[in-house]
Length: 616
Ligand code: SF4
Image (tube, rainbow, N blue to C red; front, side, top):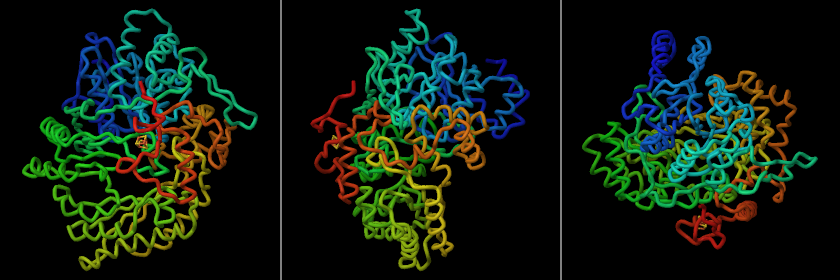
């Protein structure tokens, strides 16, 4: 440990940007003597420290594993290219922040896969760690490479590089995984392959790509995905925690030395969302809603505050407005935290007839910006995507927010949605103007409106998983149309990079043949693809050409509903038939109400369904 630590302190840190991100030792970080534990786990986030340390899931897994006496969990993040150059030129392997131990010497390296544009960073980190990139090339001495996070529900594009995907919620199943791993490590003399088989047979939310055989039809569509042996599940069911009040939550959040994206406490008040937006993968794979009680949330918020000293608490949920006790929670948080000037924040509010009531009772919230996600600008298109919101509710809510002192409204839209017309696109600009003008009615001057627009990427496990994506040309046309209509300086438009959306569109519904493209792109210099300063579409195009993989096959095909999809063998519990029914209702412009407040449309994900199969 000290060799690497001393060396980088002497020779490297003073030459790289933000050296504090490479030395660990933060408040609440945990350093154990590796000789005292049975299992060593490197928790790897394939993006920068500033982003990874802002991610609640990282803090949960870190705390969960380090609570165990038998496990040492240490963190590692993707080094920024200046640090990467230094590590490579000094021949230092990628190391963990807690004990400066090379990743190669851990039992397990677990990657958090949050978005597709991190794939090349995973390869880069493995390479920096001197661990073979492809799973077939790893030896008995190499650590087990696992991956979790939302992309474990669509594992195939990374299946050449990951030994085991951990699918679904980690809080209950990860400790079981560690128990199994420990037992295998301590008591059995098994080969790498045999260990993987044992683990998969013990825990049914694990997907090991090496244990499945994939065959294709002559048109390139998947013929079959089959387990290679008995005891390996034909469908892997994602893990799901049922009671958030009894689910682990870290009260000792690690407090970074350096500035991160979110320097704050994040308390997850609710998991899941059953609004049923038809484009939303999280809304389909994280069902049903699970609520953390007000008392538990208050206790967690208070403990986290006392243990960290952060001055902001964010209430996290996919749809915070659906938390049934939000008013009570805000009121009681105000009583506890107002006196300490602690700010309460949350991601975005749902537009509903309740929105106009929120601004007045959000007096504990710093009035920096009000974030709303209409997603589509016309009622017709909102019916297609199952967003039951009206412009009147939006305007009433914004008007009240302006009255209460908000000055900036952020609006999120998607373009390229199924059935979209030019009218739907043009209406985005009109809506932005109206929202800005509402402030003039109330306060005498136009409001500032930031409009964020992202091309729609059809996602696996959603009712739109069969839809073709819009072309790059169409996205660029839409971008020009919207930009040309905005002439007020208070309205700012931010458009997600179209080429990046196209790439996301390929991998979001990709199969295992894409592994060769990811490898080739990384070899060609791709990394930090989520960052504008490093994203290079031409390098990616070159990788597709050299590997002979046709992007169009993944992007623009109209898939048949009976087609074998590359993620059909991974289940969240939500049934394919429900997605098919919802797709039909989308084209009929029929709204499906939220099952949290009305009847159950039978998606299969919880015990209210006639078809429910409990995840075990
Ligand atoms: S089974 Fe019914 S109640 Fe349960 S999440 Fe699905 S739609 Fe909602």
